[in-house]
Image (cartoon, rainbow over all chains, first blue to last red; front, side, top):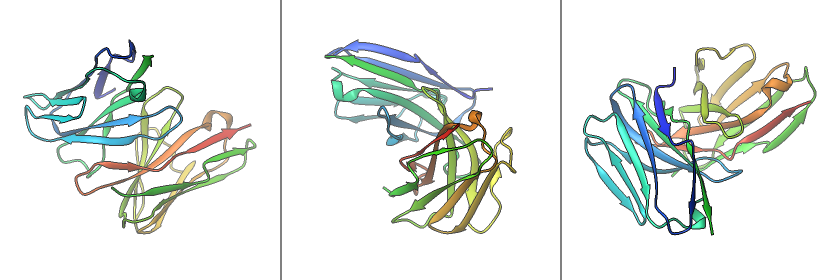
Length: 113
Length: 114
């Protein structure tokens, strides 16, 4: 079964509103990564979180890794039309091949101008 | 990060024919490459792990004889879809891991089987 759950599947916001997507793993992860895929494009690596409770920011994007290293979130403040795309979380499990990731279903973000 | 190319970007083939997709790591020696397929508005499904100089490791449910993977050099992995059928139509993407396990994806190949 699916090992990394991600919600919501779709999110429609007006430009300027905030957006959050959540990931939850059934097992403890060694790290979690986030990717963005623009329509018609391929996934692009955004960030990796490794430490329990870690929080990282990239401009308007805030990434969090839970204390138990099982959940994570991506929050975008004041969305812009350039934020449109699908955001995937991907977890790496301890002991797995380096780079072998378990992807969430993704959250497709639509931003209305 | 690593730069990965894929060829072709789009291919249309007739049912029953075979299609080869190439994945090249342009600036990075990739001992490992991953092959995914992605259906419209779906997540990435890992098909196999390609290992340079050895056999690929396939995920459960992926037919080894149908999706042939060859990783003959540190910069090239190929995926051949044999005897393609319309249900094989999909977006196929390869990736190579960076030093921390982050993935650098190729631009993908859109396969349409008629």
